[in-house]
Image (cartoon, rainbow, N blue to C red; front, side, top):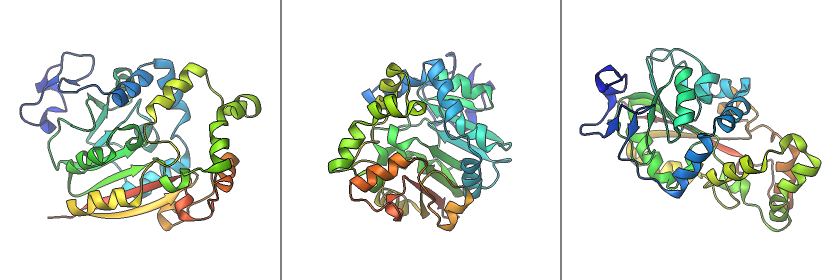
Length: 295
């Protein structure tokens, strides 16, 4: 494929360095970092990418929550940043006019291409895409995998057309994961607990180690906050709505229902840390639904 044949061509910046002779279109300006390489290494293992595709973000509740936030993707120009093997579109469905999937792992992008994505191997911190063209820009379980969450959020916002939507979900809410004292001890012992007491949550040691290396901002005391979204997006002309939730509900999240955690281990860790699990700030994730002001 060359640039004139690619659905990407109308959306690339002038003087881009995207190489169309690779297995997937690849931005040669990409500069590897430890965080980027950790994500690339994990999602380039086909079996691990397949396991992730089958296990994560595939529930009916997930689908209902996203469609409540975005509406149908039919006839829309959509950019999925950090698309991985394509979980988001595989679950949400619809018939977008253009669906660009950005990731750093070639194997995952080839899997995403098989289900309808136009792949682009590029760094979310510096995308070779023009500004203000997308109807929907989605980041699902992406921000916390990136070294500089503010920079990635700024880049994502840049792509959204006037009146378009920027949706971010499934990143850890910092206050919910602020484990302390016995809660921190419980957190540090979690893999032993999984291995001996909760085998359904256990996984191959090498796969687990590699997966954990990708979780740059998924640690106690880290994660996304309301301030991150507000301070980054409001000055860029967005209306911002935030919806804390526990990853178990669908459209109810946008009506203010946080739901219950998906497993008792979260409640135990929070209780041992002095966190009230019933409060919105204790919800595991913080969904951001932002709309750029119309002209």
